[in-house]
Image 1 (cartoon, rainbow, N blue to C red):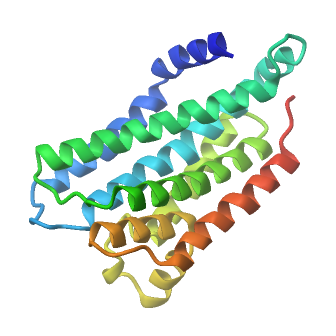
Image 2: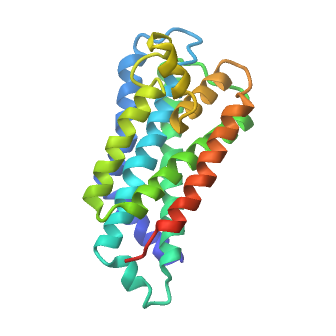
Length: 231
């Protein structure tokens, strides 16, 4: 398991998509953060949601679908290393990547841009884990259904942009039609962004939105497990 983790970590560091997931949210934060007002509670939560969404909807499903397409998972079944071990390692590494991306964003925002950072770390952790679980569940479902890595990549992109729009990541929620903004809050990414924003504003996340993220994570994970195939 340790050797597998080391090998997969080396492969992940060479993956252009990993750098893409780190740099795109950072670029957005720096560009728009130049006009950041003191005490802003919107931009950084948006950047965090973008980062987790890129890892969960783009990198994770593309990697797993490509491994299945190339027969890597099938060949693992004939070795002492089981395919399930590969899945666990990938999930852990992708989680670490999401944590690193968000940590980088918060560090730059707090030290360079002077952005407001929340003091309630436990609430941030709870929201982050639920939001990441929901995003990763969707990524696993894409990986389960996509016939190859290229298709998984395309499906992830096709899902990402509508979800990002409804979540208020492409324009402020206040500028969206009321019905779209209301629907967007109950999407996985929308619930994630809104919950982060609530914590950044010094409040507590809406328990309903936390339940929404947990439900997405559970139901979609069950569906992904039902349809996932190793070859």
